[in-house]
Length: 107
Image 1: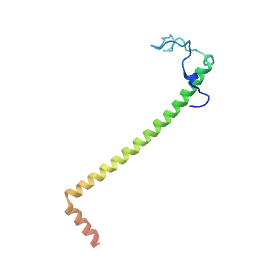
Image 2: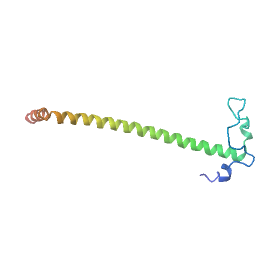
Image 3: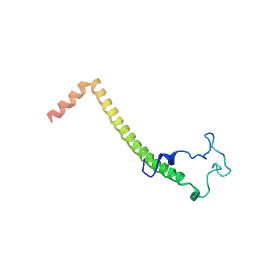
Image 4: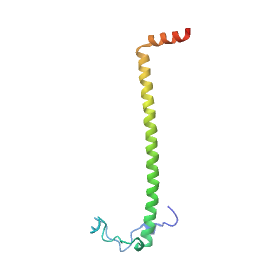
């Protein structure tokens, strides 16, 4: 955790609303206690929002990395399936493979 974010800044303030369902506001689903002007956030709220934004960036980067890994794994799996099919063909018809190898040998 960055040094500018302390445990006390992440802890709920004494005058915070008790846990439970969020307050319903009249403006696009915003709770009543959310200031319309971002400059009206307390310092601890502002720091918390900064920490959450930073965490969101980290999570988004991790999500992109996992998507890339998944694509690579899928490509590798397709290659393995292709090799497996070729091996099954060889296993089922070894004489034909030997004939092809003999023809290449005589060329």
